[in-house]
Length: 88
Image 1 (cartoon, helix red, strand yellow):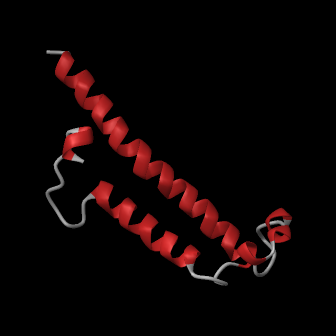
Image 2: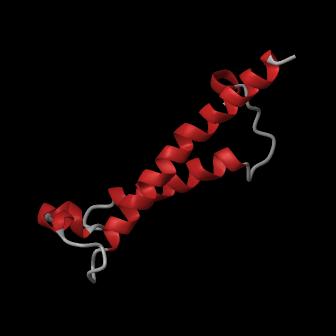
């Protein structure tokens, strides 16, 4: 984080680090064989999320949101820092 974005992680429960940890745990859950119904039969991806047994779709949506946070938050921090530093 320091090298790429200029952000030093000072605490164990840092904001940027927390989202990355949660995404890693979600990824480990999704990789377990047979854990997700959608990985065994792709036809389930076309069914609505509100149906019973479609929890994997909520898990996928949460993973997508966390992935965007992990990528975009540090980038936004870096952009704000650059703008702040250039405006003496």
